[in-house]
Length: 316
Image (cartoon, rainbow, N blue to C red; front, side, top):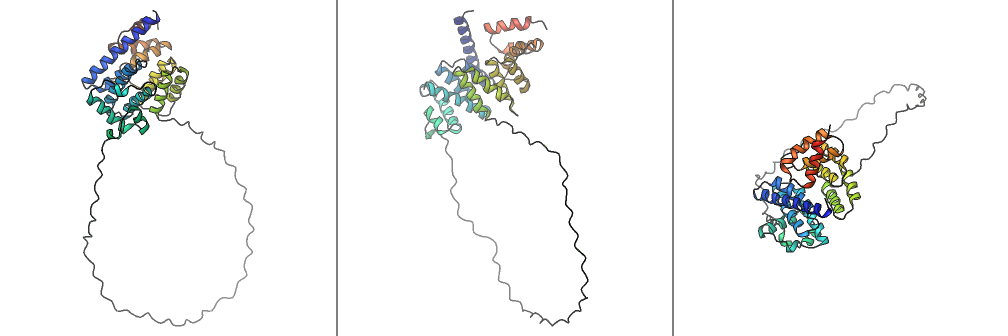
């Protein structure tokens, strides 16, 4: 298959993925809509307007699900695109959609990031500050001064008779202190400092920018470092695994998918990435299982057809 044919096939795949995501968005199935629109946007990196539209609806879907970090991630990707080709102000978005995206951006982005999108102070939600109330008067009853009590004079001290003291006794010599020899204690090695992992959303955004700029080695390094972080949420772990798949680190992707745990509803597309990673690392039986779980939910592109033939024909 020529490069031109492959590009056309990929474009068709991402267009269908975008349309399916919009259908789920209109049906208020925001989990599926977010996953599909975010994946579709990956194929539109050279079409800034379509990329930003897909990320705008992905932002709304994530925010309506209560996934604030995912909503901010979509906004950050729009901001990154604006630094290259400013298009956001002229996007063909319905007024209510643009208003909602601007409102979310006003609450999640910095002033510098808002300025890149052309969002003014008017987009920020108003904050009602309660007016100060008058001081509440003290309602406790007044306490009357106690009546003076008669003072009883203290008794005059009388001189005491001297008490006879016993004769001084000879003092025993003070003991000579013995030197204390410390018992050697086993040396416990100091704990080694753990590498600090930056905010996962910021790190994922850095990796995406590296991919967008063609620096695959740097993106692979970022995804690899993030995959070894002490703790990752399930959604972030899936996105790290997907990133390793896209930079063709199949062994790392397979490990990251295993760490992420079960792939749930609205995440079915990840089964295909996991299947390819397992196949490329020689685990054919598991690859067949993941492929079977993915096929009802992915578009059958030439690449999918090719890998399907490889995986289903692999001898365990």
